[in-house]
Length: 188
Image (cartoon, rainbow, N blue to C red; front, side):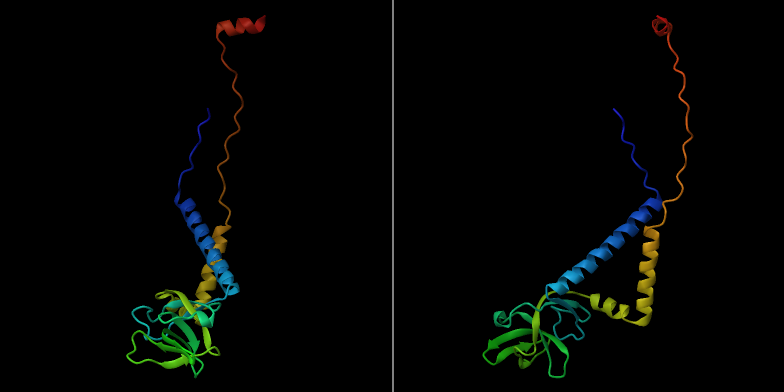
């Protein structure tokens, strides 16, 4: 039975594996972003502390734009466009025929009825604390240059030839040594 020879984990092989995994992760995140957009999920960066401690400043919130306005209940975190055109993420404290009354968790007073069918965007599905700072940094000129450079380097490293393999010397088959009995059988 032939033994399965295990490959050694050299630093170069580990590095190539890590680069490959990182590129796979970038691909998965990209596909998830495209899929989310097609399914009506939009990311928004939280710029104020009005929803702390539940949603921290600098968080990225994923908003479901497909959540129907009529399904919003008190306690849901909603996203709406304010009168000045800014996106606001606050908790619904009451749902009335006039609209949805909202309030930031860190605010003492209610915003009043701020959300109607016309300015309603959706409900918060999930928030990721701190990711918004990275998103803002990647939108700066130096952030874009660094991200593009890192991606190019990763692609180059991922498809770099694995290097020259040591060529094994071609061995000539050796003449087998036969015992006296085998030689006698071959002669007959």
